[in-house]
Image (tube, rainbow over all chains, first blue to last red; front, side):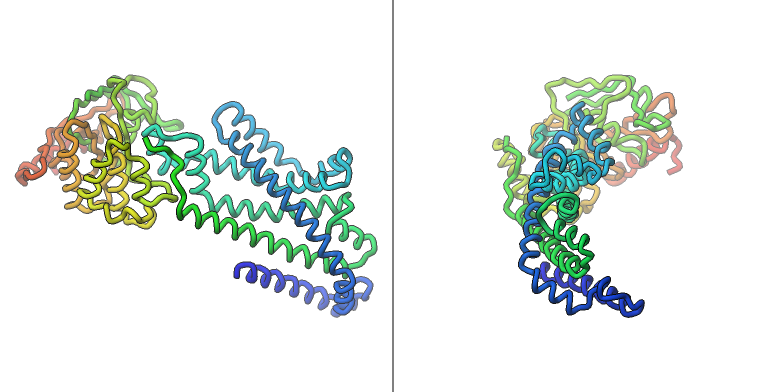
Length: 258
Length: 240
């Protein structure tokens, strides 16, 4: 139901944008070369549809892999960054300083060293969504939930696992929102990487269409990107909702009985 | 259990004025004691200093290190992933299971065992939070407004049961309710509103130490209440 709602929202926005584009064309009398008519867009979609779907799925697969990698890395580094020791302080300082640097500016260096294959795309996708995730995770994991943790601390039951469980549980909505938001960024990162130098994916197709000044191809590519993005974000939200239901349900306690 | 503070100083980081200066204070348990004072006089700060949650800037707090002090306050919650029953069972030492069952029955919380903490009323939450502390090992339990949201008859019943169940333990009960502390405490330690910046004073007033099955005379209760309120306001005049 949620998937359908999100798809409907996307298709509505996309249709409105197309409507505005074609209205502008009519009002200002732009040529078919600049803004293709609906029939041409439809023909391009029929001709290139399967190829573009394959390309966008390729992009999505890389984005998901990069996103997962970034989540794992951000969790691991966030665990260190939450500590009030020198490694924790160093991690936090490094994270805050490094995130200020635009990753896109570093992307050409990655292509120079790693070539235009899968690894470069994966790395750029992961790096683009990594820092927002890391900063949120550090913020969430470093902040005590005093009302819940106090009992465990004063009775000597607290340990890092319990602390992590409490803080994650109490901030689950925030964490899910950040992960969903970073999912979009992972997709954006992958497309940017493909647009810059890769030889695969929907970003690469957009780049080729740009060189050919073919707006119809770009419009189809954008439609597929939006479609995939909506479905992926709904998928993450569904997983988040499932985790929440499970945690509110039958979860066993992470602290031992004494 | 004896606990004594000497020459205690404490200032919150970034604050202009100390909460305590040259504070000397002590209690000797077992028994039910109260800490009373107007808002902002430092009751919770003193509780946190005694329980080790805060470290004093100067001065010392002495008590036998083998003794266990617990501090609880009324905004505490249990983790949202557990039901009340699952949580209470998890945090109750095996040797205290029967005590837990007694408390659940006496405090009327048995019916909420399958409920989630977030779905309960404030009064129910207060009782559940206190119950989980009572089944821990402790020598002194500092209870900071832990029954603030519980209705008066139930609160009185809980305090009376607590005194019956734990005659060998020491309780330091923090409350704004002068009537309650006058009625049930052995001694009421009153943080005065008019303590000077150079030295804090805690006045001690005898309470009526009402036990289960007894009833303190109403005139005596009123008399103690006035004494407590006069101490809290920092005056000896009978203007209240």
